[in-house]
Image (tube, rainbow, N blue to C red; front, top):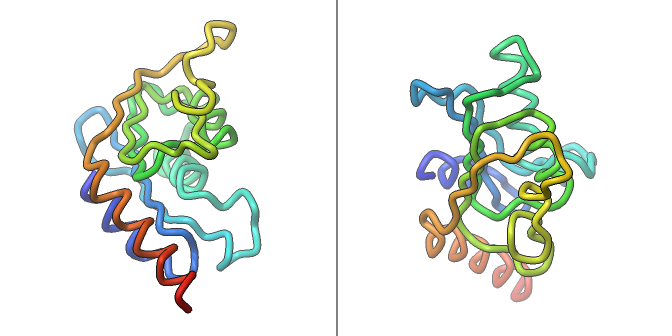
Length: 143
């Protein structure tokens, strides 16, 4: 999670969310931060970018046995992408009560109708993840 937090710090004008994909041996195979403002791409969420980069690095869209580690609970798009990529687990920091789809507002990844349900680990460095977002949005309101 510390690596995901460090990645979030690189988000510039974007909402500071960072994600890493970790291989079974613990190696980070991909990292990303939000790039929606930078690219003008509404799908350029940290999770989607990290999953794309991991698939490219590993040569397969199936990220079986990998973990997606992200600073904020994934939204519906990102939760769906995690399921479709077959990650073994999703680890996230702060809960997103407005758009979270991994247990708070929705629970996409645990829907038994889907063909893959990753393990979910929540609250890892949640205070640090939430503080990063709070600072970002506070600065925007003041600026």
